[in-house]
Amino acid sequence: MKVYYDFHIHSALSPCADDDMTPSNIIGMAAVKGLHAVAISDHNSTKNVQAAMECGEDFGIIVIPAMEVQTSEDIHVLTLFYDYAALEAFHKSLTKRQVKNREQIFGNQLIIDAEDNVTGREEYLLLVGVEEGIYTVIRRVKSRGGIAVLAHVDREENGTIAILGQIPTDIGTDIIELSKRASPEAMSSLSGYKRLFNSDAHRLEDISDAVNYIEAPALTIKDILDSIKEAL
Image (cartoon, rainbow, N blue to C red; front, side):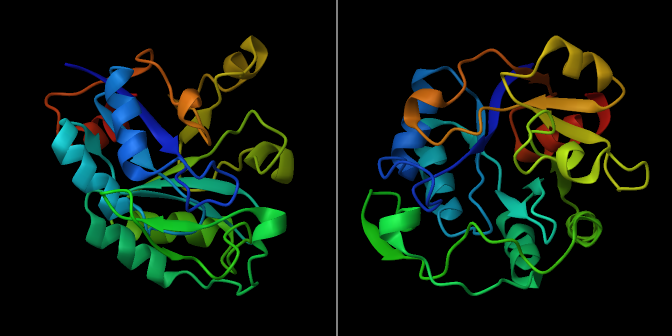
């Protein structure tokens, strides 16, 4: 079956995202747009993922446990897991740099439940790289059965190619993410990699329409992630 997806969506926990990017609003918009599977992938945090998974059950949308890691090199890596426990174990394995958030400069970092209640605020700025480098991050993702995706490699900001000059052949993953603004030249030059196309949405209106899809046997996290590993 065709599974229409968007695996890179930021909730209001990410300071760069709108405050109305609540778990229920995100899942509701995904349903309106005809998506079957999404991921809430906030910067260096998992605190709104479970609420999104609860909302997904109500709307019949698969929510992949996910997070966008900013490595010590300031490279963004999208991480996808088969279950929340594996995601949380990976998250806890990372060493966070504790820089206090300044909301008036960077934005709010809201922790929100499935009923749209703000239950807390993340104290430390999430737009700071962890102490682990990209090789370590990818190795830890894979050791917990997850998938590491080199995020928005066609972009200058926080992209693997922009920072390292190329995608190293020994980096440990052959899955890349291209933005919807990727040029034909970029797509052609990266044709040897497995590719995902995500929105990296920070606003509700930017969540992907039902355009990009994965062929999967069934609408389950396992079938979707297995298909990413094997069939892209």
